[in-house]
Length: 113
Image (cartoon, rainbow, N blue to C red; front, side, top):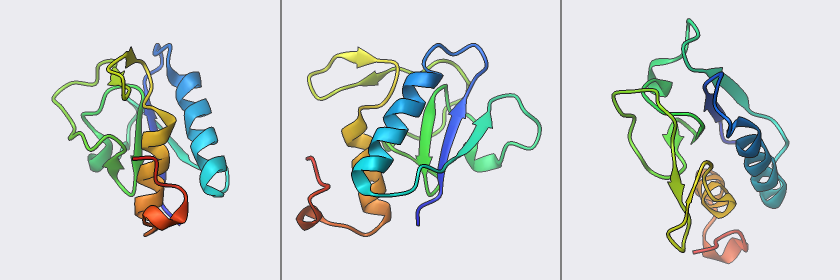
């Protein structure tokens, strides 16, 4: 089962929408509704989770968009397939990252590419 982490900042308006996207992606892949939440600025945040903006979803330590951590913990924006900027990653991107982490290919029915 993949390790899933939601990184967020206290004042981020997109935390709840990110939780919804994550829950929807987990439901679509048939995985349990379970993930670890890491709040930016808290002591003890793992090194691999530092430098990402809020909200960020990591699957097995990798950002679902493939982005590397940056030098600041600012708000994030994501581009959907049509180029529209949003405050959360598209559900399809999260599903794809989960499917990849589970070793599922295009024949799984989870590949939305």
